[in-house]
Amino acid sequence: MKRIYIHVPFCISKCAYCDFYSIEGNELQELYVSALIKELELRKSEKSGPLKSLYFGGGTPSYLDKKILSRIFEYLNSIFSFEPDAEITLEANPENIDDDKCKTWESFGVNRLSIGVQSFHPDDLKYLQRVHTAEKAISVLKTAKKYFSNVSADLIHGIPGADDQRFVRNVKILSDLDVSHISMYSLSIEDRSRLKRLIHNKERADIDEEAQAQQFILAAETAEKMDYKQYEISNFCKSGVESKHNTAYWKGEPYAGFGPSAHSFNGAERRWNIADLKEYISAVESGTKYFETETIGPQEKYNEFILTRLRLVEGFSRQEFEQEFGADKFRKILLKTHNSPCFLVSENRIAFTREGLLLSDALMSELMEA
Ligand code: SF4
Image (cartoon, rainbow, N blue to C red; front, side, top):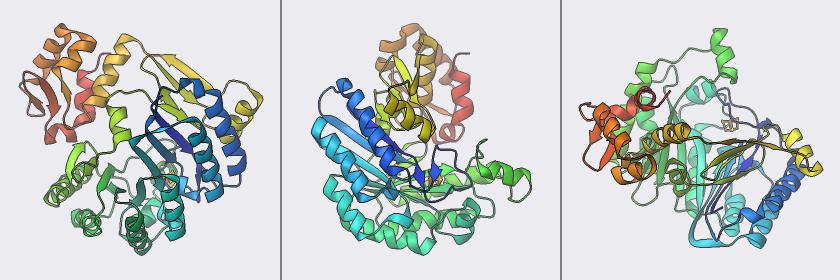
């Protein structure tokens, strides 16, 4: 393993739209970290040289006490070494970022902070049931910039009630604050989310997909004018600060995930941990099975290639495609794409156009094998 993901399953409170595995409160963090370290210990034979990236996602990693995070880093440093330019990302929410925490994270080696801003408008934050205010987000972004040159912010577009200009303003604020990386996600209504029920009960307005797409186009154009380059469907950055860890996912590289609900991929097999903290702790501590596995067959491998590589603006090269799936298949995919305004097709590369990126879900489905 050269890339590690650690899932931190605690949040101050659950946002309406969320379907990531997390629980409210961090009372179980001591038990969590003991089980997490045990899982790392159990799997240390998967180590294969210095780590290229380490990513703390969640949940809310910034909600962990400093002492708890310190135990995780102590253990990691005793087992692994890091490449000199290894990327170490910590996801953080505005309500638990301050000078003291930033200093501590920096001392642990964190060199990239990814902050869940979502919007700078109070109505959007209320709709999403976020616990921070717009003022707080601006203030912690300024704090974060004192310690980290590589700061990313998440934004959500297509929130009912928001006009196009509101989202464009969000991007401009991030640019003014010199944030180096922006992830722009469409609001989606996930089955397991509270938002789904709220919309069903008419307590929240439903999303309008056309308005969402329009907002995204305007925001993408604004971001580009401000020197952010789009490198993936939802991701924009200043020169040279693409997320190395996430780009590795999209390029099909192996990674190892630890903690409840974390996924791993070793090139041939996918593995996922129990998505329940108490069950995860009890299984890891008692030595019983805490994960499921699945072998990836040729068809699934092909479909995953389409689903991940085409997310990248650079798409994929003929050479890498043919190495995996052969020249015949490349010719077939060429036939399906070469006349479409949604694809940039050359002898050696296939990628989406901006129009294609907007319709990516449907277009990928057409290329996938049933
Ligand atoms: S969106 Fe993020 S902060 Fe909100 S509940 Fe989900 S994981 Fe926690």
